[in-house]
Image (cartoon, rainbow, N blue to C red; front, top):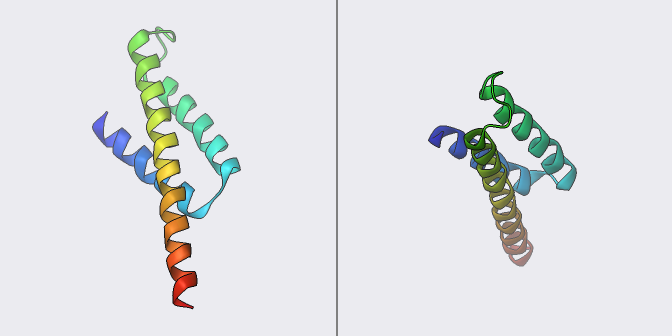
Length: 82
């Protein structure tokens, strides 16, 4: 689970740095489907699976905001240097 959080965090930062909201919406849907599929067929509404999927989505959203912040700071610094 820890590596999943790290991977989703890195993807979120990349999305925030490079892409915009449409990519975030698509990646959120992929994360939800991946979280449900990774849990297996039995017990689709298992609380542990729902909480872990929700945690992955929250990490993705927060990492996206961090990526947006980093991109804004980087662009601001680049425009100052010119």
